[in-house]
Length: 164
Image (cartoon, rainbow, N blue to C red; front, side):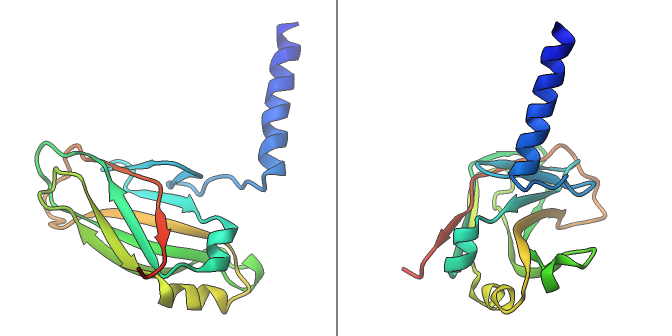
């Protein structure tokens, strides 16, 4: 009887994943759909789905908040922010990447945030017949010759805003 319940649950989860239009995560990339995500020295990249209504409205400003930072050695790092999409109907193996900008936290062990202009990137995305628009954040050391120590940065849900 237990195997029947297990089989049902696995089938139900797979059905939900397929019906939601999910794709398996790209290898080596953390992937989140909503809420917060985390960048770490071991997993320095995160990919967040951009909702279809956000793509349609193309808000010109993106605000990112980093409410929790664990960086006991105060390793200087920078967060690069990209919009990615699959042009030409998604036939390319790799998505196109558009840099929105980058920034760092100072002090490197304190919470903070970034405010980036996105209007130029939206013009490129709107002009393509692309799909699967994502926000990709990548954390890199400012001094690449220094070794990583433990760094963990919580990324709150992105906030897309109008000019005001």
